[in-house]
Image (cartoon, rainbow, N blue to C red; front, top):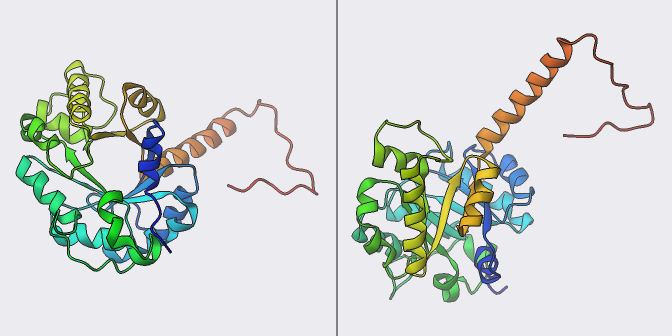
Length: 279
């Protein structure tokens, strides 16, 4: 089986932005569910998520049937973790806390095979999940994202985005806000402060000028749609933890609202021959 084309690269070639899901729960079943929900890509978070290597592999396997592009956010700029994520079949990595051109160069070297990098050869699962000719075309298909999330990274942005072999930068708004403004603002995503919007737009402009793609982490669908309208190339929409928590809270709140209003007309239950809708 020849290696498939990275679905994210195909979306970009068509002039569209990719919609990315995010997994922090260590579960192959939740990964399978999320992958079936219409995302273009889904990223497993091994930095802040409760996910170890063995479970990450099972999550990658669970997503395969959907055709979604699986990626991994690695714990840190560490060669072993990056290479093992790729060998396990990730279409790309998002690496946190890349602060300098030297950091970006090391990241690229861990993602690319010689002569473009120092990645060790051993695509144990990738050979089966992505294609038997994986080694020949992996450097052209696998994505390498450096996270821009500190004041140091912002000051070195021009050099970082000009790193050969880097495909894109990914903005973590929570850490970036802490890095640029301290605790002056709330932590979290979906920034509206003028100085943070300026920083996000500056990163996008610099990335595009260097021929790179720009990804942005978002807390809501509305903000993700706005980011796509700005020209962001990949937008993450919430994550499994937040989606589960919000759905559960909304469901409980709705029940409490209904039982607190006894005068509200009672809805008829399903007829005997009907099968109630599943979740």
